[in-house]
Amino acid sequence: MLQALDRYYDRLERRGEVVTPGWSTEPLGLVLELAEDGTPLGLADRLTAKGKPQLDRMPKWFSRSGTGSTPFFLWDNLAYALGLGTKDPAKTARDHAAFRDLHLRELAGERDPALVALRRFVEAWVPDPEAARALGLQSRHMALNLGFRLRGETAPLHHRPAAAAHVERLRAAHEDGPEGFCLVRGARLPLVRLHPKVKGIDGGAAAEIPLVSFNQDAFTSYGHDQGFNAPTSAAAAFRYGAALNALLQRGGPNRLRIADATVAFWADAGAYDASVAEPIALAAEDIFGDALRDGPGPAGTTDARETQALREALVTVAEARAAPDLRPDLMENVPFFVLGLAPNMARVVVRYWLAGTFGSFRRALDAHAAALAIEPKPRGWGAKPPSPARLLLKTTALAEEFDNIPHGLAAEVTRAILENRPYPRTWLAATIARLRAGDDPGRGWHAAAIKACLNRRSEREMLPVALDPAHTDPAYQLGRLFAVLEAAQRTALPGVNTTIGDRWYAAASSTPARVFGPLLRSLKTHVADARKRGLGGWIEPKVAEIMQRLPPDLPRVLSLEAQGRFAVGYYHERGTRPEKKTDSPTTTGTDPEETPHG
Image (cartoon, rainbow, N blue to C red; front, side):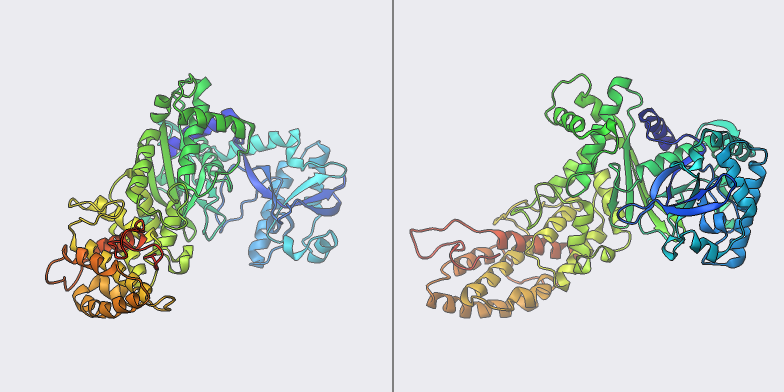
């Protein structure tokens, strides 16, 4: 995984979309303007229209823990930079002292006027909330990072050429760690103690979380400390961290949210000729992302991903035209990677790491779409199969809230989809549980999921896509029968508030022998009421046709799988609207002018 991310850094570097070692893209919300003698003149915010800090290229070559006092160079949060914090006063004092010592030491003898101004400010500044408020500091600023600039300039001083030399020197000194065998590069190189932190993972307790970390002795080996248990060189750690943060950038084209998992995906066309590698990789990523998200993907963020160019590339691939730069066979064989991450307190959990070819993932997604196919199409289904997140939301979540999707289920289902293997039985159980709890079985979402689960997990007769009156499974036929009995009630009692489906679905689908007897006896009343209104000629023939396919003694209890077949049979029958027959008042199907099953 780290090796694949290390290679992706090369691709970002060729596109000019990644910072160089020693630098990082970070939020910078405040800038303190300084006079040449270091006198603070005032604060200016760098907030977007939505109140978010603007991103900037900042000096940062290490990750820090929450316990030590390790300042960043030329910028930091307010506790470090000004000695003002809302938490532990003693910790704030230590942090600011470390920031002051670093800059007095590093900027001693500096001649650049902006850096000299910063050194003079740090030397003279005494933490004082009143003085900070006089400069324009507000309570809403306390969580922002602070940079500096010289009077009359617009760019923060860390952009000045003189700052780059200090950054390189400090970075080189930091990377002068113990030498060891780097598992990413396969060579002996200086190793990092703390691995880089990752941003963009939804739901975490912290905005930045290390992908690789060891916080308990039980996780260490051979007396190694922290990241030395997963020996990675400083260069490789920086590269994989920068690559993963670029992939997880919010709103980016290579990032998805699937329930509790944040998913990054990318292609590696590095083995192809440089003239075709990037178009092939971009097209593969866009097709994959479109298949797993609802609606169009995010717009491109660089010239390399201009909308029109990508659209033309995708059309070329979709129509299989023999364009020399986008041959379908090349894209089918391009290596492709999918990484699912989820937060766990102050750590990150790798839900899944899948490596294959774009073709293998495309075939798996095609198979998933075929497994879900059901007629009639469920309400709100859309032109393509719904994303895994929306599918689970509709079939397993109470009140259709994302937080109510069963924990860990999204990761299991996503893996099953992308590896083209049986869906987890927990998905089947959760879906049927929602039906028994009152979800509407006539919407079709649950039936599609159940059909997909059962057909992939069973070697017996497959459930059909559309209604199959001759299907031999008793549970499927019982589901059909229940739908007919419900439609008969609606025909006899138009506008009825509570149908037999509302009242009896859970019992009928699990203990049919106990429920269907009373329901069949009440059918006579419904038929009589319908005939008084000149309707219902279809009811008795339809019931007779289904009863012929049922055993004399109905099952006392249905298994979980049988309850699933019941649900599919119910949906098929309820969703079927036969064409109206005009040659006879009595038909074998539902008269569309009567109350339909749906």
